Length: 632
Image 1 (cartoon, one colour):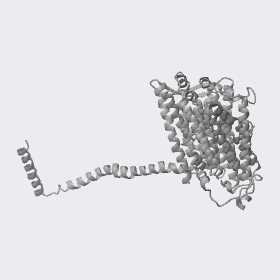
Image 2 (cartoon, one colour):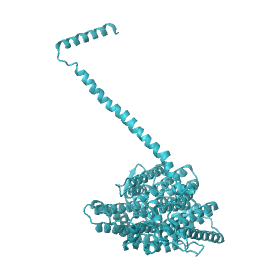
Image 3 (cartoon, rainbow, N blue to C red):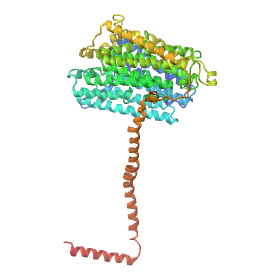
Image 4 (tube, rainbow, N blue to C red):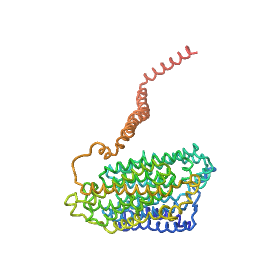
């Protein structure tokens, strides 16, 4: 089994090497086969590992001693348990579908660029697998940094476009801010626990009293890392700009991989967070605030990918809300269902963009229902799932988070419900403006409208099925006793936390009332959105008032530019022009100029005239005589 464990991440890495080093000579079909095939093999091996874990054969698998400094021993080892094996299936399964989709979507690229693209995708999958499989925080951090690098490469894939490279740099820099918090937390854990191995850290932390300064500080720093990687306030603005990358990249980053890294890290460190209730409160509040803020922005966006990007930020906020109230299983459940329907939404958006000749403004779409039947029905199923309509997957996972929030504080539930209603509204606004009514694009675009090829529709169909039935893995006790398979499966991972902070059980009658209110309101908001936008007509009138604020994303980017970017640019200009060029370079160059000038003046003393030499000898003798006579 240990060989299989190490092959899971290694095979995508080999795919990266083959496509990366062979890109000048490898054909497009070969690059697609290597890229997709390596992830498929990794998925098959992940299924084998998942079955073994289900049968009780997980554990820690050591490769070699990685770091050995005094008493600090950090092995290069992988931990395969319920949590990591579930994430392996999500990463490799969704990743494979996105690879297959990419083979058709990126067909216009040159062979060398095509191979480079698949090399980046494979490296991304390798890094994410490293992140979730590591048995200590160092291996997790290596994967953490790897996905940050790959996101930079993929977002800036079309690097000749300055806007795209700026978006890639923005993502990279904002992630580095969060990563500094993660790194400081690692140093603090070494000082506090003397180790970074999960088992030892959690065991030693479990014996500490709750709410100590060390645990609060460590968990807050870890959460800072999570806010960067999982796009929470204040480090969320990079993620909508990441839409600059190819659409399959958006699906990969926003659905199953990079943005869920922060969720995985906190879920893995659940013991630390359970013992730090102050941090849990911060996580819940920041998560809920992010969910609401992003949902309000999505209401007024017209770029199909930007709507989905802010939707991702909002859904990630709900996952953090679940983590903050101790509903760890519910958050992981939402990670899984979100991977299904959000990957489907992004790939569906890619199919629409492909059909409309790279048009992304939904105001120029409409009526695509009859031209793209498969894309339409799969996109609709994903919208129903994310809106939380039963029995689709999003209903079960989002309900689990909201119920957990109500058990913690009813205020969190009601505010979360408002965000859920906004989600239903903006998603069906997007659906209605894209697929219903009449086509609002050009005649040339309408003439070329067609359904995407099978390589693109096949992943849509698979993801649509998963979005429809995936929720039945976590059916709550309310509907069927002992039917929540996922809760039972993950219980060993969260056992200590549940012991220290046992969940409060709501009466079934209360749950029925809350569910009934939620479903009725969601249906009302869906109907409102469809009625309002199904016959949408383009207007030249710009948004005003509050609508303009939302369309401009609360001016957060402008605020950051004013208080951070512009002052930093001016400070860097000062360092470059004044400190560096006039100061440091001035001193270094001045020494050279002084030596050069001095040597030119001293050279004049060597005139070759005997009389001048005799005069200097007399003057020198007189000088020494005066010194001898007058200086005591």
